[in-house]
Image (tube, rainbow, N blue to C red; front, side):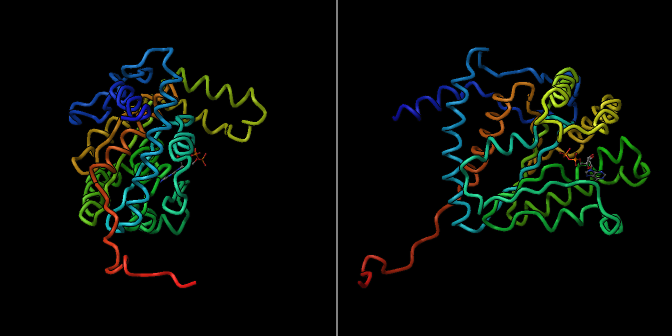
Length: 283
Ligand code: ADP
């Protein structure tokens, strides 16, 4: 066993499984955004080394998925502002062949998009066979911001949970696994991250006063996240509530979950053409 593999096994045991165990009774008040699983406060270097090993495994699995060209993986990130959707993507996917990964960020829908059913704008971006698709925000906004800010009447959004479950069933039947991560930070952690954006000139571009308006709705958002997780955690498209106050632990949980899911999907290189060993490359 190589040192790397030994390290990986030791550290991996300390990354807890954050899949929501019993969605129907999920309570957002009971989550622990500060959790670092089985690690200690001084274990950050170990966790960083572990992330490197997991990234290597991710790179290999992505290559197989691409070569096999039969299945795909859809990764969804939802979080409050400053929750870390961008940086998790950047840190977990560092070194992965960009040709096999597409990231889509969804903003406020255009007039044309609003004239369609709410899933229309997302469906076109779901990953094709062999690809990993990352949704930075997603159709879950249509039961989050839309619900909290009353952008559509309850009579409209209340049916969307069922529509989403049916949509994800369709994806699963077509060979697309969906993995959904809620990056869970505390209100105090958000305050610190927003303050950092004000304090550091190179982070000013990330600060939007509108985020403060959203922060005022913190309680309503928490309520909407709870409903989302209760109603849309399914066997084929589970929610993971990732403790995200500590960035290094958050990254490890996400990387581990993606690697283990890809290992379960078990993509295989396609068989080689026949007679390869008889071929000589001409000068
Ligand atoms: P981010 O915060 O993701 O880095 P922005 O600051 O541009 O990016 O915010 C995107 C905005 O788009 C958010 O305020 C979000 O609530 C909004 N948004 C995304 N999807 C929808 C939707 N389906 N309906 C309404 N607003 C949406």
